[in-house]
Amino acid sequence: MASDGGEQEGPSASSSSAAPTPAAVAVARARAARPPRPRNRKGLGVRHPLKPCRFFAAVQMVANARVKEAGEATLVAALAAAQKESERESEVVPDVCGGWKSEDGSVSCGYSSIRGRRASMQDFYSIESSRIDDKQINFFGVFDGHGGTRAAQYLKEHLFENLLKHPAFIADTKSAISETYKKTDADFLDADKCNIQDGSTASTAILVGSHLYVANVGDSRAVISKAGKAIALSDDHKPNRSDEQKRIEDAGGVVTWSGTWRVGGILAMSRAFGNRLLKRFVVADPEIQDQEIDGELEFLILASDGLWDVVPNEHAVAFVMDEDGPEAAARKLTEIAFMRGSTDNITCIVVEFHHDNQS
Image (cartoon, rainbow, N blue to C red; front, side):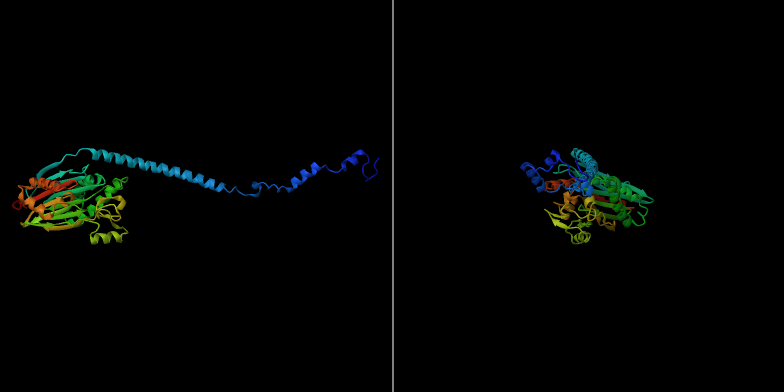
């Protein structure tokens, strides 16, 4: 029996108070030596140290995918444009030459344009005429493309047209030329947003009645013969020209030597149409010279640098004077430039003035 509050008697009591075996003691000591098991980290509100990295990596992957998508679309457009440009340039462009005469007989011209030693033809030229009120308007232009043909072709198709549309063309011709050239440049850049390297020079002569305006952008050139003397009516826009270098550097650009002087180590001229990548430094502001057409003004030569690189101004004038008419003279100039080793496309226009028919 057990008394109130007393211990149980019998075998059960004696067995519960028996000493533990050595094996049990060893197990207990081993458990006590273990470090305590940590509590659930979720309960403590502690994030796994790699989770933020995984999260941001996932975000970056999504962003990269979107950028890649947009980039691929732009790349596809650029590649398509480049393919078209390549196909256009791979076409064999025949050498051309010919002549033209104005309706009033005041001027006649010859033109010659050859691919030369270049793999593709990027030169274009334009000869146009119109009449506003009682004024005869004649336009001559040489456009030397680089990085492709689109800029030069755009100028051939739009520059004279845009000039005639300017409301002040007759009243303030010089301002109209300057504004039209800059606007045409902006229009080309807007029309061809995928292209960053296409560009072109423009050496142009605009005859308004008996007044001559020569506007130049780039390194093509205009030269007149006056009383037998060669006179340049344009100054090549080269990056190392002191005033041009200062303008470029003031705008934050650099002029460096890489075989020749280049803007940003890329372009070997300081002014041009197009050239989106360098537009901040390579402007399309024309330099304009004007003069009355008098009896001493014999002829005008407009040409790309494929001619001027190997034929000095005085030589060009002498060659023209030795030929019978402007058409033969233009052909002669391109032939001479090629024989002298010009490595570029060669395009020139020779304009002869007939003073007996000047109105």
